[in-house]
Length: 224
Length: 224
Figure (tube, rainbow over the protein chains, first blue to last red):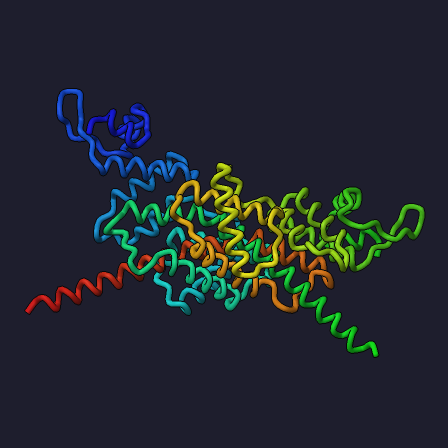
């Protein structure tokens, strides 16, 4: 199809399409004349993907990095997840002291070993997790033990298992994998946090009601 | 104790202590003379709490709101959790269209009813969760079904159960409850998100290794 049809079907203005091509975010079309090129379904799909990532609130710079990571993938690419996740900003950027960071790394290593996680210490995601651990320890030294961290790791493992099902194959469909990882991170993080807060409200209400019922029971037993 | 001793034991400068008193974040001492007042353990504890909340990265304005919510609590205060959680900024502030928001509210109501959560539709935490849902649906319309949302709700419920244990009593110890809720939210949110990303890397690596092993197995079976 010509660029006008691509623009119409994708709902993307022609100047925007040309901008994406110049930026290397969209491949050139096949040249079919001195000033014309032919575009295919792959172009439509890529424009849809860019649109989805934009609606998710990602900046153009981040989208560009994510697409490049995706386009650089081969069957051997071992760390696609790390690359895709690494295009996103780190959720924790606290500056903990070196002693705290060391204690955090120690805790994290113990939990990762216990659970047999296949992750490289020193990778960006690992470092971000250690920093988040250290931020907790810095503000609240007794808040986090190995068993405590392990309970959160178990929750994270549960989520990863249903978020990346057995059939999930980043090599077969890099675009789908990118959508999964990037949107799954960007869009589901606020949802997860909001649900946790809502569950806290529920849990607080439930404990309070239970305690009130227990007190009523005691009062009744005591009265004749 | 006099203000100089309070300052020394709490590690808080005298002008800062006076500022907290003026702002209503710390109660006045008992007047013991024309220009002197006596302070007790409650003052020390309050200064420690303020310090902890500050190290957690909360602004003075947020700490002030949280302390006022805490001080306004009585045995009957039904919504302490909601008040404490409400002092924090919402994690999701996307502006979804009204149709999406309605679909999100519908999904959320179904899940909350199915799980029997004791939460008030329309409360700030509820609204924030509905907005986070709507943001997902807006960018990725097929990403979220009732069973999908329910799996996240189950994860949130698991966390709330170990984060707020049976013995947790906001009425008996409001300061401890505030520390739990506010620090638990502020400090553990980045940790939870980082662990989820790390679990994604692990899961991605595991699925890839499993697939590679299966392919090797097929290859071996095919060769004579």
